[in-house]
Image (cartoon, rainbow, N blue to C red; front, side, top):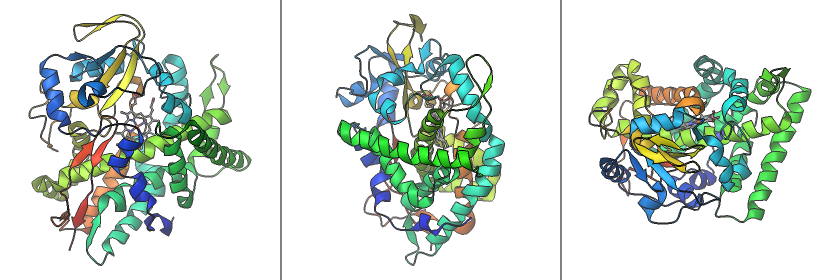
Length: 429
Ligand code: HEM
C-alpha cells in the first residue's frame, strides 16, 4: 500500500500536533516541574484532599458539570486500586464532562460492569497483540513508516523535526487508514474531532463539527454494510456481540459511530505524544540509545519505561459510587477521584530512582496505560507503531542526534491531560 500524501507539507500538522496548542485548546494550563511538585505532595500522604488541577494551577477546574469534592491518588497502590475497582470508582464521571460526551458519546470509556464487558469484547479481537503485530503492522504501520523515513532521509539539510515528520503522522494515518478513511481525509477528520471537543469554542461550532464527523462516519458505515472491505468498520459490523439478554446480536450504526470516534481520537493524539517522549528519552540518553541499537530485544522495555517515566496523559478521573476508604482516607460517595497515573508511576516505594529513564529496569506493571477493566485497548497497536518507527530510525540513521542548533532545546512540556515534547529537531548527517 502506498500513499504519498502522508508526507505532504500541510500547515495543519503544526496546528494540530503541538502540545502547547493542544493544552490551550482544551482550556488547560502548562505546568512546569510537574514531577517535583507531585513528589512534594506525595510526601504529605498517599491521598491529597483536593482537585489536582486546581492545586497545581491555582485556577478553577472547569471540566466538570457538577461541583464535587475531589481526592487525588499520589502512589502506585492507591492509583492502581482506584482503577481496578471500577464498581466503587466508576467511569460514569465522563457523563459529567460535557466536552467528552458531546464529541464521543456513550462508549466503552464511560460504561461500567457488564455493559462495558459486552461492548469491549466486541472490539477486543482486532486489538490483540497478535493483530497489532500482524494485521496492523503489515498492512498499515510498516508501509507508512517506510514512506515517512524515506522522506526524512531525502531532506537536503539532513535535519528534521521528528515530532512533525514522524510522530504526528504515523499514528493518525495508521488509525484513520485502518478504520477505512483515506489519508486525504485524515487531517480534515481530526480537525473536526478536536473542534468538537474544545471547550474554548462556541456550542454551535462544536455541534457543527460533531455533525460533520457523524456524517462522514455514517456514510462510511452505510457503504461497508453494502460491501465489506479489509478495514475496521467492516470488522465492527461483523463483530460478534451479545445483547443484554446474552443473545447473539450485532453493533448498531450508533454503536459503531461511538466506537469509531473513540478509536480515532484515542489512536491519534496519545501515540503521537508518547512516541515523541520515547524518542526524546532515547536521544537524551545516548548510551541507552546505543544499547538499544545493538540489542533490539530491549525495545519493549524502552517503550514501557517511557510510559512509566513520562506518560502522556498523567491524570484520569473516577466517580466514587459509595463511601469507601482509599489509602487510609475516607472517601464519601459522590466524590471525584483524580487518579494521577504520573504520580503513581514515580512512586519511590515501587521504583528505585523513579525520576531516571532506564530501559533496563526489571519489568513491573506501571499505570501509563491505566489498569483494570479500562486498561488501554490500543496499547498493543501503540507499541507496534513505536517499535516499527524506532527500529526504522535506528536502522537508517547511525548518527541520529538532537539538533544542538535548535533555537530552544527539546524538552517535555504539557499539563495533566496531555504531555509531550515541545519539538524533536534532529540531525542525521
Ligand atoms: C501510547 C499511546 C496511548 C496511551 C498512553 C493511551 C492511554 C490510555 C489510557 C490511560 C486509557 C484509560 C482511560 C480510562 O481508564 O479512563 C486508555 C483507554 C483507551 N484507549 Fe488508549 N492510549 C494510547 C493509545 C491508544 C490507541 C493507539 C488506541 C486505538 C487505536 C487507543 C484506544 C483506547 C480505547 C478504545 C480506550 C478505552 C478502553 C476502555 O474504556 O475499556 N489507545 N488509553
